[in-house]
Length: 217
Image (cartoon, rainbow, N blue to C red; front, side, top):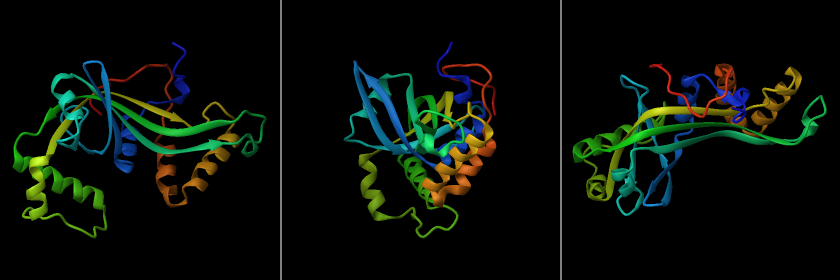
């Protein structure tokens, strides 16, 4: 199979998880009776005995949650750093292109039925998103959260397959690859550490595949 090119595929599952943790706002795609639904939802990764799960929440008025009841699989796309690469940045003669880090996951959704567990998942998500220097803490007795619970659909998505689409000039000479990385870092100066980690952990596939279902990482 010639597409996707294997040199643009990520072979390291942990690097895809790292991207999802660093950029948790995912595009969630599902279908119901011939209609495609997509929402942009922050998801938090949690380990389990398999590949892990993503935990998230939908507004009960969002019709997408109904597709979770009848569909056996959903697709998640996490969007990392990306940028246009001008041929001017390269040392050799090249064509214009676009470089990016993306992580795709497929999984099976299940609802979190217990309101107390939904509440706990909201508290956990807030703690994760606040990061290592939190400025806010969501308390269990927060009255606004209590009032909102009836309108929140909590869910988990069990990961069944994954695919890392990391197109970062792997087919170019080393000098050109370095300049392409610099172009990406220059676009996101506040994210240089994350970008460098994504590059450092990157492992290029040797064969092309649509999706991966490796043993437990």
